[in-house]
Image (cartoon, helix red, strand yellow):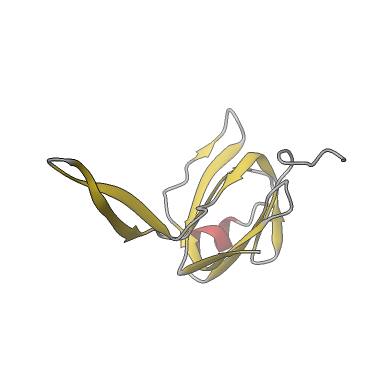
Length: 120
C-alpha cells in the first residue's frame, strides 16, 4: 500500500486570489464544541455550543498582497486547501483580527471569520 500525504504544502485563496503563505492552515473540524457537565458523581452529560467558522494562516506580505480586499471586504470567499487534499471553504468572510504586518519576518497573521464554513 502506498504512503499517503497527510501534511505539507497548503494553499489559500481569498476571493480567488492565491496568497503566499508560511507554514500551514487552521480551520475548525466541527461546527460545535462539547464540554462535560459534572455533578457530584462525575460526568452527567455535556453542553454543546456553536463554533464560529474561521481560517487562520500566516501570509507573506508581498508587494501583490491584496491589502484592500483583506482589510475592507466583509463578504470574502476563503478557500483553504490542506496538504491531504481536504478543502475548507469559508463563506461571507471578514478579517477578524487587527493583523499587524511584521517587517522583520515579512509576514501577517490572518484570522478570517465567516457566516458559514464547510469541508469538501
